[in-house]
Image (cartoon, rainbow over all chains, first blue to last red; front, top):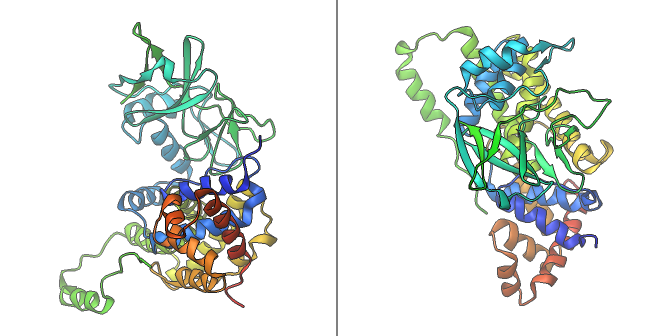
Length: 219
Length: 187
């Protein structure tokens, strides 16, 4: 049964009032006027906003990095854990990247995230991962979507392979959707669009222990 | 209505700076340019936040603006020269954000696209606009939006306050937001 409009808008209002990102689903456009009005009212509740020191610092780094290095540095750092895995970047991801004709540095498909001094982090029992659905987990500074298929699990980075934005799992479409621009990825990390070619998402190492716990290689 | 922290008094800050003028060390050009750019991006962030209502989206979109504007920022142009460019970029990024998320056309975003550059990061212009909108609504609609958005009441609390049910408040909230969207605060 389709979601009632008042419930749909309340879900979005509740997210906004809790400071969460706008997560819009198919059909939400029917209430576009109400949703954009809700976003404005939510902003007023918080009062005029300034950037957080951490975000300002990130922007400063972005501005001071060389233009041709900007995309690779920013994204690769986020993929591999906010700069924690500098060694891995130099020897792995960065070493295998290619500069596109448009100046965007592409990371080779499915490069695994291998943090320096990485460690396995328990992210929950296998039974907590719904079969066939993506679940966002954090292993230190590494964000990943874990997918369970029966008794086995796979994981991909939660960071878009183009813009440094965290993806979300769109259950209805079974896709990982980028909030920053119109691209999405399948559960195995491949871009879903053939017309908007992007590298695949980075693989994240994940395993199931004998005690049926899921562990992700993080920082 | 709660408003965020204000900047320290500018005249006091200037006076303090003057006292210590002799101690000022000339910063490298790149750092000065970055500081100028960051100050301008503060305005952009406030502008975007007032329209998307949450920090995560506001940060992503501000970062997109910064990335698009890097070549222009690197030219070392004065703040006044790059402000217009940054806000044009911000409007474009916001337009893409809404059109991607909701299928809104550029024409439907006329209000954002035509809006003047705000005077500063603590501009009260968005709050004033919202107050104008609230004033145009019926008592019930205004009350539900004030309680929910400005006072942070839960649906249950709003229902208790308005002697109604949660279900009825949800419907009223939707209708109030639809009505608010139709109000032109510039009229």
